[in-house]
Length: 154
Image 1: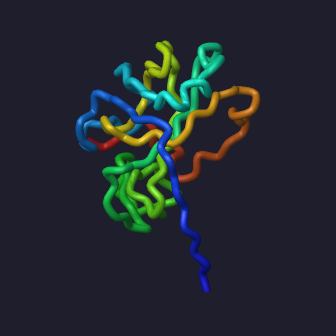
Image 2: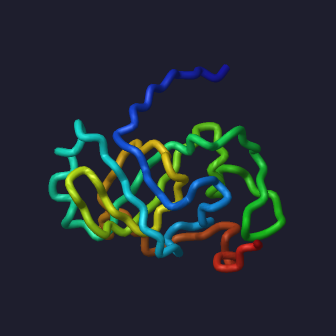
């Protein structure tokens, strides 16, 4: 029998992006030159100390517009069904989003970033620095994505 636990997540801010609905969001934000703003709530602003020294940050957020999910999904890259947990779909049992963005500027509690793939008003859950020597892996297997990236269907 599966034991379930209750979680309480407290947003630390909000994402302000040019994407007003889910259909506007690019499949992969890193390809976009659009700028977004991450507003970190004032009570958490001190936690941004020294963030200016990083070129990229990891942003974790809640897909608050996500409604339901399917365990088998089609992706923008092909017509085959794939297991949900082998995709980047925002429709998930626990709809967490995670992306690496370029940090363009900081103005007090506001971070200007490039490459974010979230709808305007998305709750921000956490920020971590992207550190190449910790986060990058030299040898990876892209699974079913092999040969498909860059060939999105419209």
